[in-house]
Image (tube, rainbow, N blue to C red):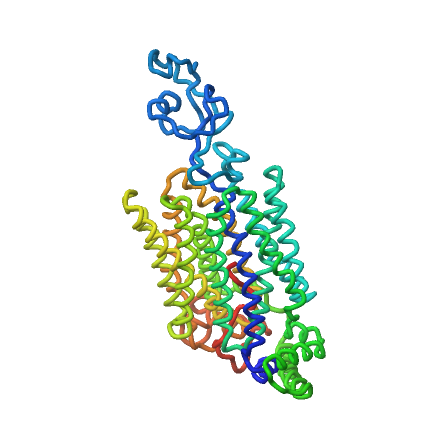
Length: 568
């Protein structure tokens, strides 16, 4: 009530809200640029040792005969330690020794990539883990940014933190493009990763706070669609800009355009109200009303907002009256068997969906064929995934969609392992089907998780689940690193995890059109197949803390959102 009711009087999702919402959604595009840029910035082309007689040659191709004379079978990081005389090279004399020597310098195939950070700093052979480490630290920045910028936006407001994140993102994005060595580049990318959370998290929250409950599902998904647009546009930049340093700078500079948002985007009215700044909130709402050509007095707005405040105060007082001990925490989810089982299953779903999503997004280089086309398709398939969710999420069961999408992703990815390598197109099709399915499951797990957790611990539980997802995102670069051992191995692992998580999701209870869980006791009872009271084990009654007694009444789940916990 309150603000939600006031939105209706302002023209609901009127022209003003649509314009501001569209401008906010655009900030998702540079976030996608930076999150996906690593595919090209740290691209690893084919390489070989520079041989002693080449004298700085950059020509990668060698004749098969010369290759056999120079390199042991399957070896790229060492060459035969022999005298490469003219007689040896033309086959007049045999090889005197099978001993090898490690590479001092390398020659890279420039057929696909002109250069990259990998080729400039020779992040191959014994140093190839450094490329995966750089991407992993980028995701560490995303994790830290979601914590830091989330707290700052709650304390200082959405608008200043959004603007500060954009400024920092541009500065460190340019620094990454001019970094003289690996460690400066990696630190700059870590900072950029942190700002992607600051930009997307705040933009997502502002977009959700602008609309009423019945439109939040659509508002949240459309924000993610703009991320997918940025995903696809990244391929366009990589097509026209071949030097990795200029590519990094080119992907960063569009952020300068959003600096003008400081004078366009208003502060969130919901945040202003939460800080007791009602006059500022009403002023912003009147601006929207004038733009929408709606006439409403300050007194009417004030009365509507007062009604919402009184309702919230009553609900808070009701909780305080029942609170006779320490407040429930996320650890309470692990104190009772049914809740513990459901929590672990939900955490597994977050771990798998995040790891597989980023694993597939960053694995397009290993699919073979046209790398840019694979990358573009990987972004394009996200759009139908989101359309599928818009059409089905409030019609079908959450569990059915989550389980079905994870199983489909698992089977599609496992199929790539058994398809012959010569059938490259079919491999790509199966991998992209897996990407579509995992994208849809990612959109589902947010709402499904929010409906599984009781109100008293919902925010902290979703925060913990989101942290689990970030951890798997940090591991995704090392998952793709396994392609150096066996090319299909990353897809095999992703497929197995997705299939297992999908089947295990059947153990979770369906939440669609079910009452909201309010207390720990409600959460423990929900989905437990026992009669009568709740039991820890057969014959042992569950001892509830006073504050965990169920509240009378419950709210419906229609329009439920996760208040800023997002995959990006």
